[in-house]
Length: 101
Image 1 (tube, one colour):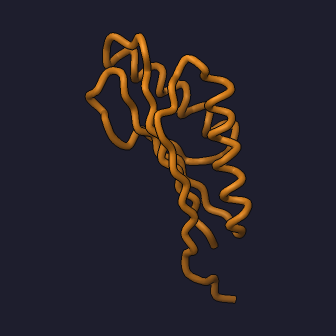
Image 2: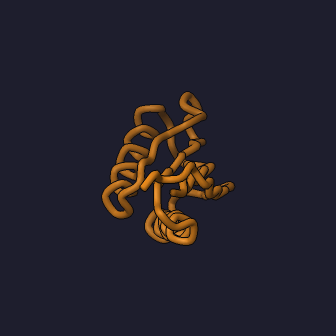
């Protein structure tokens, strides 16, 4: 089993309040979950208006599948939200235990 983790740092230009930021992020996180069946959450920079840190996680039987899924989520975000600037991102695939048969 493999756990895929993606951390994305975003700049949200033009955002003028935490309420506006949270509305944008809520829609993005819900869409990522719906489109890619991943877990997604704001993981840092909670009180900064124009910056956000999003974590995405998935579990898979294949490291390649987990990596591909997270890469597709990144591409989707870049393509569908050109109003947001992706400052940085990283992907890590972690092997986790063995399944007893």
